[in-house]
Image (cartoon, rainbow, N blue to C red; front, side):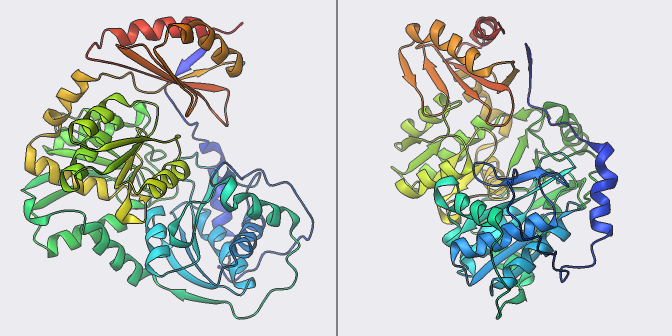
Length: 493
């Protein structure tokens, strides 16, 4: 048995092939030939598109998916954006041509983050949106994230299965007429900036130095637009930028600050710049990660708690949605502030739907996804950065805001176990620990509470892994003890 913190292998040896896709692309007007035969598409996941270039995903497959998307939604107007990966321009071009072939008006964002596609879909009243992105996946991957009207999520039960069936059959027939392209990049970004800035009280901000690491992903230009808007409104914030320019070769590694090995460079820059806090984004910047003024990484579950308190101070009694992996800190804050905590399965499609069903003002996952009712119930990596700047301005250093919460509810962080048979391993854990538990919850995996400590164990959908989180009530020493016990039970046969 091997247990490690989550790590994605960066397949740099395949970079030339990925770059070649861009080099042989003659522009988005080149319609991929219709091969006209059914095929199984392996790039569909539970709620998005993701796969290896040239294996699971290419321009022809993207074209099929685009036509399937438009037809499944019965769409007349759709938004298309893309990240900075070397292959994204060609794939987005193929999607655009597919939508045109379905007679759709295509609102083009160009280089943009996932949340900009979300926002534009609602802002323009479009029937849906697609952004071509692989976010934090290895360099030889790409994918798509899609929403329907109102920026509502798509999952297997809400459209993805229909899109897949249409794309696999590839029986679309001749191209329709009436499709057109409209460049909305400037208008869309201006509207997005106005919405994001509406979440922060500019007058409450005090002079802060903030280290921002875009990871050479897509965040840089969008951040610059936000920074310009902040300056125009008199915000006294100073930004120190690093790895800021989009670069699809990712010269400083794939932007995924959730990986422990990727954190030291940001931590060191925070210290070197004397920043009050640091922020780092993943490739499509729908997740943001925080570092305090000492360079210490702030685990996502504590940011969820802080943001829950921010919204409950504005809207007493509101509902707050959280995922089931690490819950006690968030539940305690929500209860103390007079709110209602609502648990959802892990994953953006599930959290968004629960928020819509309950009217929750905010939802957060420990993996650094943060969702906002007034942002079409979608996740954003820029709104949390502004809210934390405001919170630090009002209440003091981020390290101090988090210290008490970590002491009250210490957690292990997510630990991944690579196993030959995850199902058998989880069954052994259930057999040993469930009889001792005070409560059992199967919202997502197996959650067991024992009074003074709690665990959540989930199997990966894509790898032979189980993911473990442990938390306690004020007793950090319990965490390694319980980890050792659970690790022993998880041992392979």
